[in-house]
Length: 137
Image (spheres, one colour):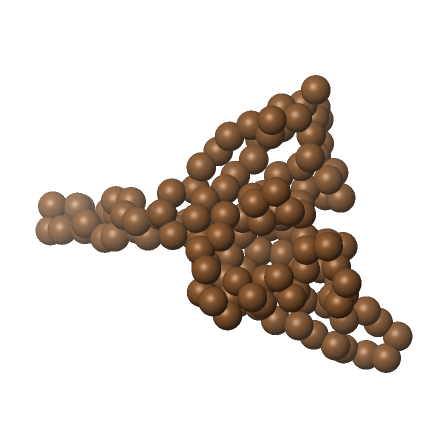
């Protein structure tokens, strides 16, 4: 049964194919449209724009673990080989919406800050082509 009401942040995750990133801390999706200016002398001193190309990305962070089921090491291999991947922004609840598309890993950063803290990493998947919306099966 699909989620009703507010979706809890702890339920929204990033998957790469069927694999959820292990021990995630955050997950986000971003979409934007390149707007190009069409202002002319007939615009009565008002700026005018039309939408152009769309772009999207999925990003998140997780705790670093050498024995993660799916983690930094797996993402590093994909980044190093410049492999196209399909990240998915979704819950694990059947009937909920999910967003996915083909992408490449644009950024992968590991951080070891402080003394009494876990090592964390961030990843950004840059979309290439369309972002699609579907339903979790």
